[in-house]
Length: 445
Ligand SMILES: Cc1cc2nc3c(=O)[nH]c(=O)nc-3n(C[C@H](O)[C@H](O)[C@H](O)COP(=O)(O)OP(=O)(O)OC[C@H]3O[C@@H](n4cnc5c(N)ncnc54)[C@H](O)[C@@H]3O)c2cc1C
Image 1 (cartoon, rainbow, N blue to C red):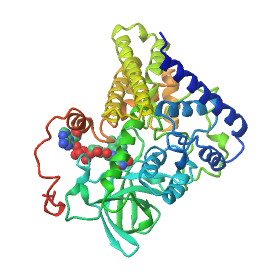
Image 2 (cartoon, protein in one colour; image 1 turned 90 degrees about the vertical axis):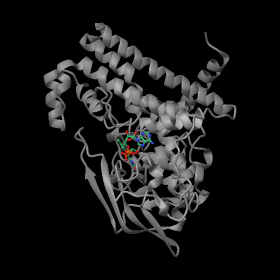
Image 3 (cartoon, rainbow, N blue to C red; image 1 turned 120 degrees about the horizontal axis):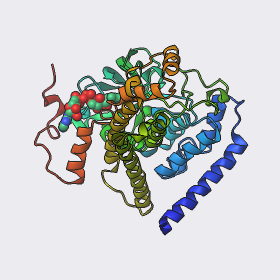
């Protein structure tokens, strides 16, 4: 049965797709450069449609924004500039930044001019992020930054970083943090790559020695960084969880470092006659369409007849559907001016679950050939030929990466703590961390 709400949703989504398709027919041109294309897309509000209109967006709900991304892909145009700028920095600055900061930073994100990374985690501050020790000391119109960050995804391509640093040690730890837009191309910054078992080197360590950031790049006010950080984390959890605005927006990489902006836009669009190989690097979009992908794989090699594989495929499909319904609930609540507490945390937990299940069912479908993983293009071609399955590498890549989603953006255990304490109202663990001065807290040696 179709309810009135469903019917309204369907017709508004159809209008949106029609409007975007008409816009793409006029504006998409594979011959222009990536930079020109992203200018058109970003300034028309299609790169980050979730954002409000004063921040280069269209104020859409998350599932409509996901539809926008799918429509651009289906049309055969280059997708929006992906990465952590679009996923995290833009919505955070749109919420806490001044209009000047929005017009500088968000504009350069939606048009792909600058690439961003997230400079949050430190060797001694992950789950306990507010325990960070990277310091920012005021010096006239600037702050001097010294410290180390770790697990910095895509830091090697970043022009700017969302940096959180300690600006006051004489107040409780959550109250002495500030949030900056940090220039990665300056003396004193060293980015060192870390290789993962997938074969990729997505992560980095970032060392900062007496670096500088101007006060104009302080987002959300001095010592108010924890509130700003929570906005970033909320977008990380809900964005990755729903597949909306993944860190992998397209094949072209935004920013000056990757040097893709001057190249022909059409060269970054996959040809439709080749099988679509999804990225195995991470991000919700890589898993969003999991059920369909794995059902097709299982049909392709006959394992769909195996009852345990069928059962896991159904579970995968069910989790995906629950995520879709939850997105609709959030959309309806937002339209009524309400909020459903804990949804970003639930979305993130669902993605972790979906990733682990994708790993298990994917490897079960592949059978013995799931033990072969390719680390280079040449190896990939050899494995594809030996197995006759062009998706094998994608499945093994996903399997090797599957540990990641239950850790980044706050581990599964931390999501459960948040739901327990802030949504269900369960008692918090007793400690003095939130009231004692940071300078008086015990530190790791
Ligand atoms: C793929 C990936 C990408 C990442 N990208 C970035 C990035 O771009 N930028 C960035 O800043 N960081 C990034 N991170 C780092 C990530 O945010 C941290 O790894 C994460 O917050 C956990 O911190 P930790 O590794 O220090 O683990 P710890 O905090 O040391 O946790 C270790 C274990 O203890 C558990 N634990 C800790 N505290 C509690 C508690 N109070 N209750 C219950 N259990 C608890 C945790 O759940 C975990 O199982 C990334 C991580 C991954 C895996």
